[in-house]
Structures are given as C-alpha cells and as structure tokens.
Length: 243
Length: 262
Image 1 (tube, chains in turn brown, blue):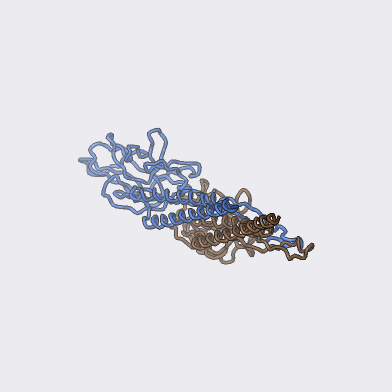
Image 2 (cartoon, rainbow over the protein chains, first blue to last red; image 1 turned 30 degrees about the vertical axis):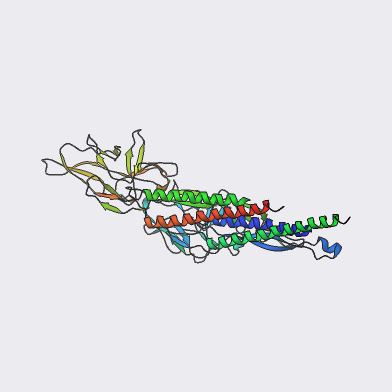
C-alpha cells in the first residue's frame, strides 16, 4: 500500500520539476540564443524487496537528467552592426571572471576602451583567444560571412567560433552563457551573419502542450495516492468492524 | 512550487518589454530619437545532480545532470544608434547629422550634454540654442543685420550681412563621438550624458574621418520602425499570456495537493 503512495509521490516530485523546466522555457521564449531544456524520465526499480521476498520490487520514476535542445533558433534581422548570429554549429567564446564561457547570443557592443563585449561587459574573444579591439574612428565594422571583422576594408580580427564534439557536456551558467568541461575546437567553416540575432529555440506551442500534459499526469499521480489512501482507510474500517 | 516564481520573472520581463516598446512608439515623431530594445538573459541555474555523478553501484554515471533554471531577467535596455531618416524642413537652423556624432549642448548647470536633435533656434541675444534655450557648443553668435545663414557639410557657419557682398564666417559647429554611444545616459529632452560606460568624448569637426556631416535644413527622424514595434508588441503580449498560463497550471497543481486528503 505504501508502495502505491510512494510511486504516486515519486511521479509528483518529477512532474513538479518538469513544470519548473517548462516554466523556465516559457519565461525565456524571447531570450536571444536561449536553448530549451527538457527533462528525461527513467524507470527506477526498487530492489530491496526482491532479495527478501522475491517480490519484483516497485517501479518508480526518477529524473536523472535535464538535457538541452541545441537546435538552432530562428534568425531575426536586427539591422545592427554589432549583432551577430552563427548560422550552423558553434559558439562565440566569452572571457568572464570565472573563465571562458560560450554563447549563441551575439548581441555585442563596444565598451569605453573599444573592446568588443557582451551586454554583461565580458570580452568577446577572437579565433586566437585574445580580446577584439575596435577603432571608433575607423568607421563601421563589416563582418565577412566567415566571421572576419573589417574596418575600412582592413581586417581587424576574426570572431572566434568554436564547436564541441559533444555538446551534451555543456552546462548552463546563466546570462545566456554555457560552461564547458572540455576545450572546443575552432569551427572549420563558420558562417556568421552580421545584423542578425538568433531567437530563442523555445517552441511556445510545444511548451504549452507540455504543460497541459504535465498537469494531467500530476492529477493522475495524485489520484493514485488518493486511491491507495482510500483503500487503506477501507481496510482499517472493514477489519476493525469484525467484532 | 518554484514554477510560480519562474513564470513571474517571465511576466516581469515581458512587462518591461512592453514598456520599452511603448516608449519607442510614443517617440515615433521625436526628432533624433533612438529606439531602444529590451534584451533578456536567462537567470542562474540550480544544479540538483551534477553531470558525471554515479548513477549505480556498477559505476555508470549521469551524462547530463539536472539543471533547473530560475527564469529570465532583463539584461539591458539597449539604445540602437543607427541612422534615422532625414526630412527636409527648409529651416536654416534645423540640422541633421548624417553618420556618427552628436552635437554638444551646455546645460544651465554648466555640464555638457549631447544630442542628435538638431532643431535649433536663435536666442534673443543672437546665439544658436536648442529648443529649450541651452547653448549649442562651441557657441555661435550671429552678428546684427544678418540676412541669411548658411551652414556647410563640415559645420562652418557663414552669414550674409545686410549691405555686404561676401559671406562672413562666424563660427564652426563641432561634433563629438564616443567609443560606446549606446552607453550614454538619456536625461530626457533628447539629451544624453557621458557615463563611465560610454567612454570619453572625442571632439572633431564634421566630415573628419569617423565623424558624420551636417545637413542644413533637414531634421533626423526617430529611427523607430512602427511595424517592427507592433510585431514585437504582439510577441510580448503572447509571451506574457503564456507565462500567466504557467502560473495558472502551477496553481492548479498546488490545489490538487491541497485536496489530496479528503
């Protein structure tokens, strides 16, 4: 009987977390370069009873992973010189106090000393790993499709576009940044679009239907606990009424 | 239930988005206005189970781990300084800047402010001033009996005096550029102030390398594109609604819990 309640409870815990993930996706549907998260459910077989009673055990649900959907978002034209989007695989590299971080959010600007920086003020680094300096008096910045920045026709730097063999090892670090465990390689043929930003890849319709599904499943799980509780109550009533 | 607060951050962000859009639309006809854009970033992530943690006694590991986000924040409201279209007005003291640069204006308290709005006028003592009567730096004073004033592309102000044949040079307007023009602080009245983020002002003459030129008899329109603003507004409204639905769903799930034990 406790097993039924435990199974229902395990499901409710997992579903509450699934809703948090869905809520975060919905909240970030207009965040540039945002990648949606999903939660993976697994069956977890309790084996404690199996050894003593031969009972196969209770199957519970657990959520060992959230995983990030790295599919590309849409490209939206912004008409701004220092907005960049990567068309295809890869990430821009950002030097933060905590180390190098990676992002698909290419809304950059120039700081008070002429360095190309993110909105949080962290330096954008080039293909060689050094900061990118822009001369304000040399006119507008033009980016070639492979990410080379030019002013007045003179190349000044190349935007670093890095790719990972295994994107699953990336962890989200907030501020649209990802932290990596392993070093990336420079992307072989990067395609950078100037004047575009990558929109969030959250699909609002899917997020809504996910949410409905989560809620209905939550209801069912609650009913399971409810039913188990009801059975226990009846058992007590029936058995105590014998004499 | 954390999803309540996550959705609340989403609603707040969209509210900020609508505020920025409405300010852009309200300033559709403001001379020299630069549109703004609210930009969002995801908030911190809570790592519940680290990637690489053991998932069984036989040594298998969790490939990804659980990361739950805390919602969204408004990273910045960014001023987009792209050139606005120009409209011909025929007025001698309507000046538009084509390209980079801002006019310098002296505030009544002595500080210097910067503006792209070139709808200037003449004060009672013959000085070139803004609509609010603040002097345009470096200061141009018109002599008496001026018939006509001409301002060249590179900012030289020449006046024709009654009874004289030739134009007389009476001053020169200069422009100022910043490393990071978007980092200037707006103080209303189309005026901007220097901040640590903008960098030091660099003064130069119109037409110098890196500086724009001055167009006499034109005004720069706001660079707001109404169609773009309205589509962003629609998207913001839908996003707001969806966040509200998340709150509703969380609430229903909580109420299921509350009614669990009958």
